Length: 332
Ligand code: Q9C
Ligand code: ZN
Image (tube, rainbow, N blue to C red):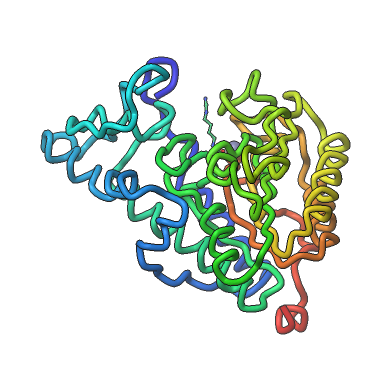
């Protein structure tokens, strides 16, 4: 829903198809299908009532009217401020609004299955890193970082990066850092860990004064309770280029080192790219090589989780020099 009309979604399957095709072509590493996790692992991050809603939402929607099978479900009413959000209404539209944050993230027939598969992908990457891999990239969609413990929005339903971080905690990493590089602030991930000292969250993003998700992501959000000083935001103005962005990245990495992180989860949104249709930074293709070098220098076991990035055909790497040679692939 955009300006009163239903418009095509930016978050489309082709995003992942392009990246996967390029990964296979350039042989950047072993490509594996994720394992399927038991649904109970999602409770490490999300509430039971939210998961129950998501799992049954499509069938409920079609149950209201068989014609709904041909149209997406969108929220139309929300429990803002003085309205009650602890009471679970039986009305479907009321529950849809209770569990959502915007009108730009429709539910469609495969949403739950796709979100589950995306979460499986992030969890599998975390398991691989916990098992000794230096890094693993979870090629997920839908993305996850806007999804909170009990709400969807910003094209996100299950918080893949939060699930990966929680999995690393469960598998013995005492201190885990999440570095969110998507153009949009990772409000869901921040909120999930806001009162925890064991997971440090830091994000570089467009200033919420002008950029989605608007209502979170300011520099004065430092964490609360036991989590005080374990949250740090780096809002930057629309139009920010690579020099300033990279200097900010280095500050964020320095804080992650001071925190004493034993593992890193990178929310890898590629909507920082200059050609992105819904974002405002101006990073260029070759800049991402330096981002990779900076992240490598952090020297931490790392789970990369795909987030946004909507310049669909350009989001893949177009530098043939990046491909590994056959013997390097063997050693990957
Ligand atoms: N006219 C992620 O990048 N607003 N989500 C779009 C388009 C929502 C982005 C407005 C942006 C959500 C994961
Ligand atoms: Zn984004």
